[in-house]
Length: 333
Ligand code: NDP
View (cartoon, rainbow, N blue to C red):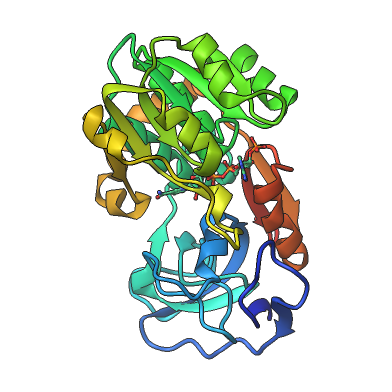
């Protein structure tokens, strides 16, 4: 059973030797446990934060432990009365491993969305869609005519968040790296404007596109990009802090906004975690499902084959060298 084990805490981008690919026997399945064969492994920016020995929303992955990750797979053997062999399930307890034996309490059954491939359950109808949906609909609550700025807008969460906000009648400005990603946002997803942060100054572009300022920020990046947006938030603006990817590999913290502006502009800044919304998954399915079905919301997945390349795959999230929700296909469906 091949699996990736954390050997040392990375400094900056993950390097060879930080994790090791090992072969380990598959443990015996005990009462209330299931053996899952991994089909897809979700690679998420937050995986990098779990490797740090720092306070987080989950404990750090221990040195010597299998790397944590959300997986979708097939039950191969079951000693649970809730699951049987052949069931398609997800679990956050399986990790970067071909096979995993996990307690049934960590396992959820996959409800395939009609007409959509299984990868949808690991992206737009899974955690990605949940994050975008609740970040926009619950945290920001856009009103028609308001302007929203979204960073990492061509990424998995950002691209869905922008389309959801657009469907609420908001004016949507995306920030993304490179002309091709920006073109996708405006020409195919219906964003009102896109800022290529690799080729233009974000603050100057915002002054041009939203001279009176903006009402909402869906923040995925942090650092200089966040400061530029924050400095242009209007009085009573709302900010959903979803992620700060520019700091996940940083050895020195990037610049932060001057929080005095929260007071002078009475800005509401709220961090949120998708896992808190698990009990409300139906709202996302009911809200986003029809938009997927009739093509109002488009989505992409980027599938890399083979668990062996997972480290290089994960680093794609930090270079932007991927097109859509990043998954690793570990075995065939
Ligand atoms: P994405 O598909 O958006 O991939 C990450 C993207 O971030 C890259 O493609 C790249 O896009 C951009 N990026 C990476 N580094 C930088 C940088 N230094 N400066 C600017 N842009 C950068 O990943 P996800 O959609 O999975 O995640 C997006 C964000 O949402 C992350 O911050 C993540 O942590 C957060 N998140 C939060 C959740 C929550 O519960 N709060 C749940 C899920 C995700 P480009 O090519 O445009 O540079």
